[in-house]
Image (tube, rainbow, N blue to C red; front, side):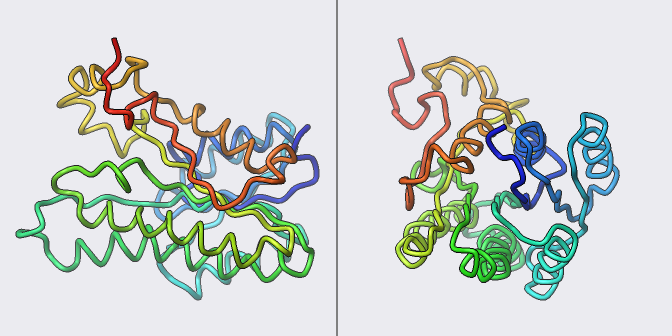
Length: 252
């Protein structure tokens, strides 16, 4: 097992990409803390699935945009399992709309959750990683950070900032055995992308060289690589998982 005896926190872990990562990490031996905001039933169901499969997991309610709540959440994991080895900053939200019509609340909420949540949980977890001189931080970004769409100024800004944060933090903590990387998914089959896929799914697939949407498991396998020993010399990188969408070629 590649993550045997490791402790992982996964924000936004009850659904979609977070759920896929939590299940795969647990199957590889990690103890998994599934952090959720409102999806209590989904989080508890996932924890039960992991336990039924012989793994260890807990569900923790937390608004990632709340700095004190993030600290409390991380402390609870440390109190239960003694440490944090892996942090996956996956929690995020979208509130799309053209900029000229964008309410300040839509801007602030997306930035506070996507970027602020990444700061809050990283700040809470990284001190313990410093002391143990090892750790893996994996930030879930998006191809929208570099390949923008109309109506996503807030979302694209938050993900672009996450990419820069990933690179900057990597330089600060590398000497302590901590790696910091990001994954930039394209169109993945999740609740967040469902509305767009339902409206323009066929057209979008034609833009993807691999002619299909990604699955949470496609992203989870990259996260497992970044969390495990084989990625020990990789840090400050943003790995794109989009079936070739960002190449702009559309395939043959």
